[in-house]
Length: 206
Image (cartoon, rainbow, N blue to C red; front, side, top):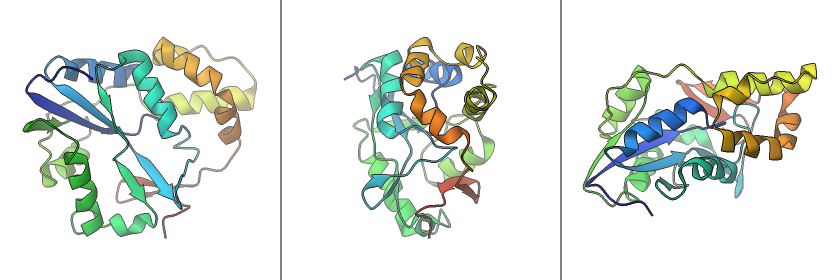
């Protein structure tokens, strides 16, 4: 476990996959806070649901984080939506959404905490949930652009070195080791729905 520094930073995140932008954000937070990272999960009938927009399992994303930061951060599975996901909406009125928020907070041992997002809309939501969001700008490298390049490499059959420059080297090795996941989703339709600005797998939404 990392050494507590008096205050915690909560990072609710997709990480599909982890990019150098994520690495920079976590490194920045680590300078002042004990960082708790919660990669989002969607679960139906006890099984994690993955889609083209959400291809990597929680276990693999946890491995990505720990391949870069070891045990200097805390990675937890508590940011989990259980089917039917529609019951978490509308966010601030749903008892399930508040239960999820409280489950996340229950894992924080520090009395003082902040949360991080680079998105203005998400910052308003975190503020409404009393998660004390920091003011921050969005970093340029997005996981969606990395996924597009990964899938393009499969479909076009051409080696693409560009995506490798935008993920930490240990994460590159994890992706290459689990290339079957990229190959699986590359030619599939994306069964992810965006509802009220939030991504949900269609399977398990209703």
